[in-house]
Length: 454
Image (cartoon, rainbow, N blue to C red; front, side):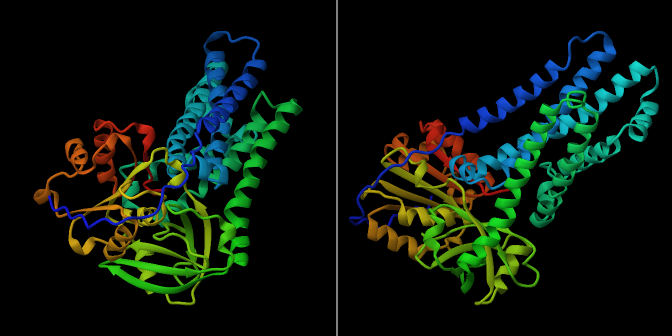
């Protein structure tokens, strides 16, 4: 295995170790909302007798939960600062993906159970009852469209299909979730037994949906405009770092007000032809400066490829900062950073800035070829200045073997279980690294990972 370790020199003293927010409060709040929804059904249902009532009751429960869950789904992606910083964008994205599957299943189950239950009650067939419900009940046809939209979004988000779509296509198809939520909102109020004549329940449902809508509008639309007017982001330089990898330097005003932390990312919208309509997430690849930021992008698609042609002076809209892949997660004095490919970008910023005494910070950087080692000169300068460890593993797996076995990691990094470990890289790499770290004795709570795949 090709491993190089530049010499070490004295560096900075160890700083504070801020604690990270535990997401238990968010999960508790979501669970409490679900319990309240079930209580609403319970209070409106004195008894359940017969097959038709059991089917209809199950349909009402799944419908209420689906209507509630879609608001949770939207809130998770509403860029709420306390969630973005305390829970982490990557974890929120995973919750959102898992919640999306629940919403689709609940919505489809609600549709099938209600049709079946009403068909048993009326003594008709499934097809006949479906037609009757859609044509004679208020807002049922809208709800059917909502279910079809949710199913379609679920299909394009499936693991077998998602990688085949451009990020921009997948991202914009998700906006149909807003339409589905609006259609479902009216259906629940018009047809839900729990809401008909119950002003308190209606007010609570309005508050839930309007509250989420206001948060979405404020964080996803108004805040970027406000930041653009305040900070006036502009491209100053575009530099090629490696084959297919560029760095974009962005100037701005009053950046101290953003309270940016190394390891975080923004969603960037470059106001030039062909790029202005899409906001893509890119991490900072250097610690933020007083009047400038830097991102580094690898050619992975149309949007990232188009950035190579960006000219100095281009105006930029930036949403952020987001993410909790920062020093705030740290709980131990010793820290190991493991980077693969372009995953070096947030770790480069942490390697430069995370408080550490000489010998307490190590970066392990995996790349297929020496040409793929982005920031090599910068990393070696940081290592020499701060007295930190820097290890390279270069070459295809067929030649160097697997550098991420528990035995190899333990040999490379003494006292590995005493470290906090930050991991960022391709999905295949992180899928091997995290189990290897666990097997080497690193507790799960000290393994910090963000894939930035949302």
